[in-house]
Length: 141
Image 1 (cartoon, rainbow, N blue to C red):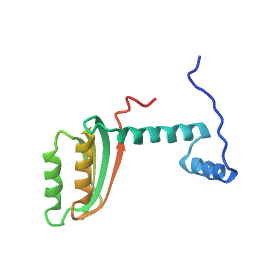
Image 2: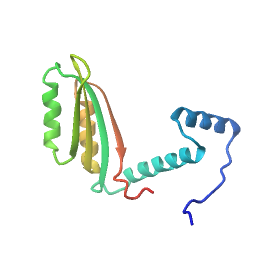
Image 3: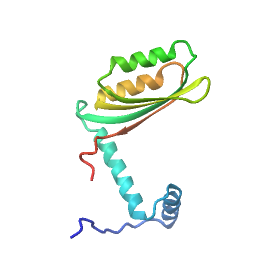
Image 4: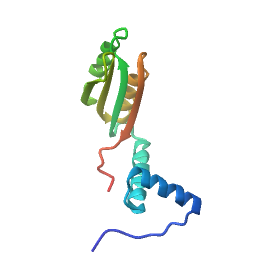
């Protein structure tokens, strides 16, 4: 017997039209998959907002910067080495003669991840940065 449960949702026609357009743009085959992903995303956000700052979490941080800028690569590397236990993996890509993209996978206590991610993104000279928060997935089905 399947664990799937069906339920109905009432929506305004315009909202449903917008949702269907969103699903189409994202490549979803049906509404159920889109709704499941939205629910999972909400559960991940809820888990991140949990009270215990020492509980293990994960995040991906991406930053773009000019590697010629005033010892910026050294500053970014130093931040990562200061928190080596949180940096699980790093990928460095040369975008052109000046710009680099770094992608870091962070794993550890929520507070440590947020602190490192925010410091990397806000470092003077970083042109763009983004942190995507997630969980280890153990509580998401």
